[in-house]
Image 1 (cartoon, rainbow, N blue to C red):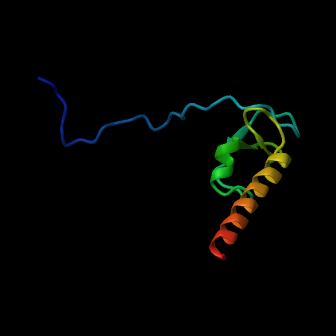
Image 2: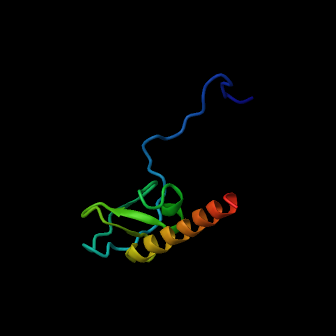
Length: 95
């Protein structure tokens, strides 16, 4: 017979960190210390997920964590697509 207590909650180690993906070096300072971004002003909650945005721990720059590329072109393209979709929706509802 087992010594498991059905009324005791399961125990899990709380001092271990979750596994992280390798991150590209920062294009601004070259450091390899970055955290994932969950929300930002240009992409809301969806943009950082789509473009793998991370924030450098040294210089606080945001960049693509997989490629190490800057986000200027991505921001312009993303905002252009959002603008076209909103304009199309506005035209569709006002005819």
